[in-house]
Length: 97
Image 1 (spheres, rainbow, N blue to C red):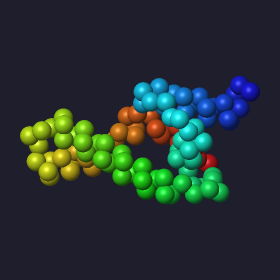
Image 2 (cartoon, rainbow, N blue to C red; image 1 turned 60 degrees about the vertical axis):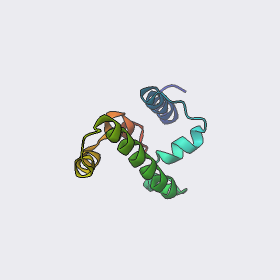
Image 3 (cartoon, rainbow, N blue to C red; image 1 turned 120 degrees about the horizontal axis):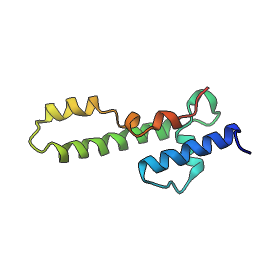
């Protein structure tokens, strides 16, 4: 049904996958991971905990590769300033009230 909240969610998820260049195998898990806790009876806090660590590792690895001469302190500043989620369009895919 075009224009329904569900189709809007599906379109946002498809757009996110396109921006990331990755097709997620488990769409249900993807929706849960992107669902704000205020609108879901099922908690995604464990996924959020894990996802934060995975994202941090990916960003840290990329920064290390992109700035091989940078000190640990300089890399930490860059890591803290990274806005990967915003650049990749994840806020538009987040489900909230």
